[in-house]
Image (cartoon, rainbow, N blue to C red; front, top):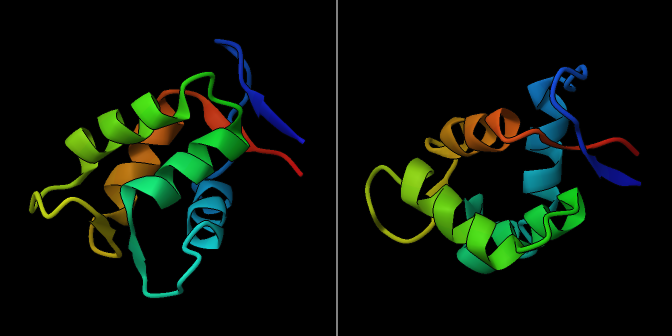
Length: 89
């Protein structure tokens, strides 16, 4: 089951977020496309996963190639973590 954590609640460790993002890498090429990121935010329970994926790419895609590589994955995880998204099961 997936939840969005209320403010003040304990957040999971970032390893859980990493696992969800990597699980959404359906072609196992270690690069997350906007659609794969959207799927992750959908799993996190985002009301607007497409918008959240777009915002995440704007924040985390440092080389502006339109996807998230393993080098940029920590930026994506930080973005999701700061917004309170996580997977608990």
